[in-house]
Length: 341
Image (cartoon, rainbow, N blue to C red; front, side, top):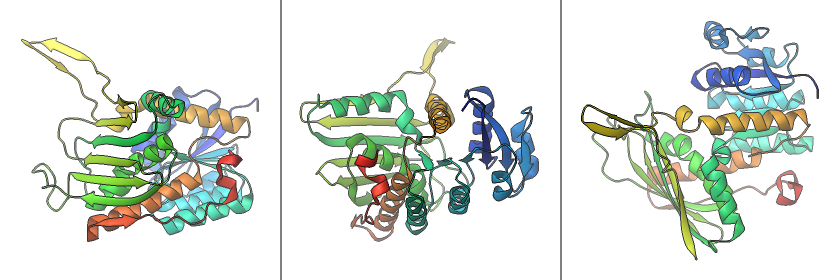
């Protein structure tokens, strides 16, 4: 494909606006062809000085706009299923931010619809797969240098939670990244979830179970634990340590800028995910554009989005009811088998 890939961006909020900027200023080989958001004024504001992009209140109208070759979905999760199915019906490749679909039933409908097409069109936005630290850790684990993987210790901290953030969202929004990262790093499905609730932080809003301690079991006996703390108050931190039979490796300790002045020195801590994972988002979107221009789909797929939804639902049940909750996945369609690539 010699021409620029025309991308329709669905959603012009915090994430969508950042992707519009990225497509216009950072990524090569693509252009913003259309933007859809119920708040068209917000969509125009997100476009800024981007030229030649049409603005729509409805997602479907953006998909049908002139010059659209592919779709980037950054709208709220409940709108994803309809947008994905509409893109499939038009044969449009899609990069869909997580969650692919918030509930497992809807996520399975997306998997089944893509399987009926007989070809992959969707990549799901689990951007940690494109972070340099996570990629190095994945290569190390795949090399076998550390022996069989026994445990992953994960930390996921936010400065504060947004308004109306719920205890369930610690799992199905925040920890969903660790769910995918663990599956990808270990090459295993997660088979059970247990959620423990320590005493709530006094910095958490009333009624929010924060922090939480989440324990995952895998199909080959590894354990994955996650500290999810979304009102830590000081910064955005994501860390992961892999423990193998012959050694361990940890990522996420990268040092930020050190500031010295007024008789003291301190290190800056990123304040949100768009700062901490800026390079990962850039690489993810560039890889998606490059693959799409070659007629290919790479990265996390619809099955990964479905598996994350099922595991997250099991985690929410454990949070609500207590105890260990098994993870039960539907049969994997041949389209998503390892042999299919």
